[in-house]
Length: 267
Image (cartoon, rainbow, N blue to C red; front, side, top):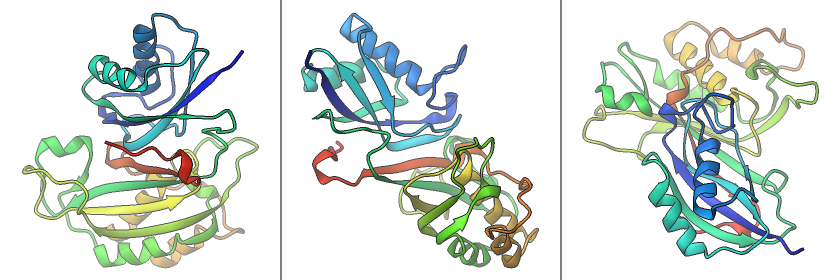
């Protein structure tokens, strides 16, 4: 029997959800997607598979999931109906049919995360859903130097929670920088805010939040550049790090599949 495969791009504000993955008794992004698909199709003879398991309260501006069907769908109507019935903090941005050789998990891809933060004042409460803030000052220049230390291949064993026996701790970071925020804006934002940008082919559980946590510790003067550098060595004591950045400041900004034929154009 012929099967049909669709790659669907999605955005969501994660603040009131318990992450992507379905969990018993909890409201998650995957749960809401499957409920809505089932309601539209009037059956449950389908399967969905996400490209990234974002944690509770983490948002996404360009994530994706794959829909497996036994019958074709009208793509435009499907997107319209999904966006009509999904809650206002979840949006489908594009859909594209792919062939059976595409695998959303195993297809090589680059994931870009951003972490939005500010310091030096008490922010408007509305920023809490997407931005971490500190009322005291941080040493931003030192944090920028620290971000550069993550570049390249390192042992990120300390930057992972609940690893499995198969977890590969040596990862390559392709982009790691702190810059002034020019991505998001609102009239209730502070005058200045900043973004930690980090790109890699894959991240471990809580890796980006632990990296951001170390940069915050650096900015507060609690650790040094040498301490951060040593945390990435192969022969370091791989105990737990003391600080993990809050989830709400983290956004999966973009997932880029390394095949131009399967990258839908977002609307």
